[in-house]
Amino acid sequence: MPRDSMNSNGKAPSAIASTQSLTAFVKSICDIMRRSNCASALQYVPELTWILFLRILDAQEARASEAAEAVGKRFAPALRAPYRWQDWAAPNGARRKALEAAKIGDFFAFINKELLPYLHGLDVLTDGRPNPSATPKQRVIGRIMTAVERTRVDSETNLRDILDRVDQISIDHIDGQHFFTLSQVYEDLLLKMGEKNSDGGRFFTPREVIRAMGRTLDPRPGDTIYDPCCGTGGFLAQAYEHIASGLGDAATSTDLADLKTKTFYGREKENLVFPIALANLVLHGIDQPNLWHGNTLTGAATYEQLFDGAPAAFDVILTNPPFGGKEGKDAQKNYSFETGSTQVLFVQQVLRDLADGGRCGIVLDEGLLFRTIFRT
Image (cartoon, rainbow, N blue to C red; front, side):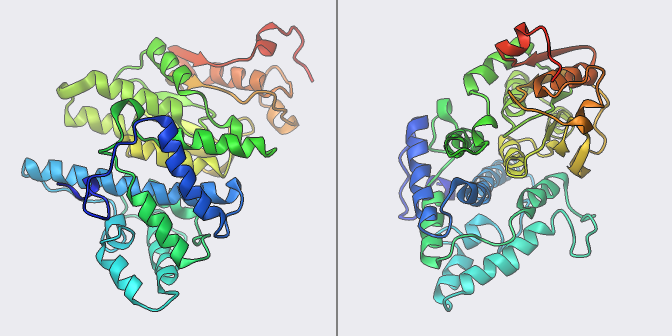
């Protein structure tokens, strides 16, 4: 039985059979973080992002390795030992056991001084140059981890407890209807941030809306698909699943390569959400999510390397612009109709980005649809 099908006691974990049970399980992990120097969602959401990401990435690569071995092919993992989850984080990992047998502080030293620098180096070398030997998937992994300078958890005992619990999340034991996605978890976590007068609640769209819009626009192989304010990447992830399921067993290696690297594009402004979007899309199977980090409306970029080679216009646009926002003159001057209304500016941006003959699904509020005066 594959390692991901077993928990730390050598038994298959029970299925997480609903969104509610998954949310409750993740909440129990957050409770440990809250007592270990991650008191607010603004602190534990980024910490949980990278830990969950490395766990599910390892499980997916273990599955891919077994599939390749079954047909006599070689599989090249994105991470090398001892930096895979199975090495340092899993309860029975060789490096984990060695670190537990070492002196107090060595576990933190490994993560902060070895693991994280290695992961950062997948994107950018220590001299600031892009890593020329990294694959597109490795570059994305490096970018996801760049914002993580050190673990926030302040107790090695609590850290091991967190790792043990996260290790129990198995992609083989979450039923198909509630397949694990990072966006599913963060819907609840980001809403809690919003309840505390933060903006976290505005970064996602309900999955039912995403699925309905995706089915209606029916993206096909060969389409370029774009979200100018992608949040946690829900629209792009759903579009990938829609196209991949339509291809089925008839998909060629070229079809899959194009789907994973040349199909999905997005932009996201928020520092907190950008790495979550990257992680979510990679775990869906999109090896190269072409995401641009910065303010779409002003054009000011924070990180744009992953967007190199993006087309000037897109065949399919799926998006839910933020409601109620106000933009300054630096954004307004870029559009024919100058207004502070974020929604109106995004409508103009979408019309600019849509290719001839393209199609768009966009969520708009009643105020925008029925107001007659937009200028503010």
